[in-house]
Image (cartoon, rainbow over the protein chains, first blue to last red):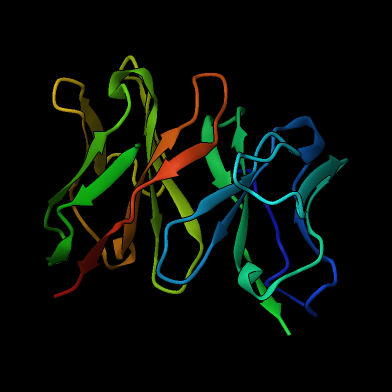
Length: 108
Length: 119
């Protein structure tokens, strides 16, 4: 089955840039989506189709993919960005939806 | 506005059954594929099942043969029938709307309902 691997945690100082990676076999050929989840809440879509932002999501959030890695970048990090982040793809070979292992972003 | 409200969670003994419901409002329910996603306590998100607009469904390997996803477009209700429950099925269960037929991401989620499988 298709596996998406994320670092368990990323720490970043306010105002700096956080980069969260999502590794998967030839992930660059898939459409990658990213969600933010705060404690006790449902996930919220922050990036879809690799690099598009839903309305209401700050421009500080951006996404990219290349080869075997997708990256969510949060620029000018704020305290409110502290959350868990998950990447997600659809694996057409198995007809299954797959989430990454999740990354906890801590704002120092 | 789009709303998804789950119900039916609770405590259930192993090997018993439980049925979850997700009541949708604020959009044309029949026009969207719908999913169930779960999250075990302290763990990550796990996709459970999808039902398309024409009723075709697919399941995660972990629940295939035990869970059944269905929809009632006349009542705007998505359901998940869970049989032969196991301790590892303990999780918050979210329903989620797939944004469009040609994409496979979720633009709206419910707040979730907790299922605890324990004797």
